[in-house]
Image (cartoon, rainbow over all chains, first blue to last red; front, side):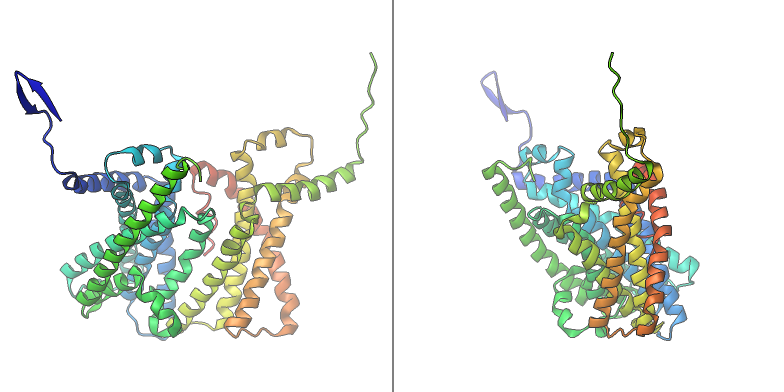
Length: 275
Length: 188
């Protein structure tokens, strides 16, 4: 934007190429969403208390049973279960929720690309799921006496960050595809247990029928939990981190394409306000 | 001034009318998941995967048998349906602002609320039996048939406490905005 003063064209605002503003939009939106979700009773219960219940069941089973997997294995799995729950419920209905709040039209009209705005929301929601990771680790240590010794602490942090990003981007795909399905809340209700089971969060993949493995390999929680377990218990965490990153890139492309299609269709048919 | 004689149906007929017809109308209006698109994923799909999850968890940890987890989870999903159904029946009345007019009517309260519980009770029993059926088909669950009447009694006897919890949780859950979370996790 320029103003004319004394024959000179002086810039009032520093103008930068638009894509350079996207990280700021992403960061601001992420932080805002994080603050909002952290105050939502439903999200806190989903991310904090529910994983503790499942972690308790799994760790009590482990202690009563005859298998030798460490308690940390179950604590980490239950933590990812919590992140997945927040992603399914928080990101699955993200467009419908923005519409319900009356925020969808302003967000679509904003100069920033709608996909970037959506991404900040889904990443913020997935980050709230980190509560569950901390809660289950602490719960396992305090109540069940889990041994919290991390083989690769730095790689564990890297794995946690990569896992949250990949789940947030998977949330972008879910959020933009669920909007096409009128009863998406029912689908959200059904998507918790099968993904927990298929991705081997509490049950090792070797015990699950082989035909489900291809489904597990395209889902980020599989690689995320594998990366976290390798970094915590011992192993090669870089390989699953790499797969998780690759999955994130695929989700990003798919999510942006889907959001663009949904936005274009809503503009063309004038159905932005209506479901 | 002409006095108009108001003819009331006999009290007993009125009770059953409110109980059956009122309960049915309430169920059709307030039970969100009555549509097949909602009912199949929520009341059949999710319980099925819940049973599978816990059976495989039991196998992974080496605790209990398949029957242990199938029976336990089938009873749990039965109660979940009851709690959810009753929570919806009352919380949605409040949401649609019809609870106050209903409470202002002279109808018998017992008929009013028990009638709302009956269709939910049948739904829960259906879900429970579905759990047993798919477990028999997928997981090789083979219950001894002579014990079937005992199970059926247990399913039925578990329903009233579950619905009682639904009645209790409906107002508190709705106020705190977490009514959709409360019924599931604590029962796990």
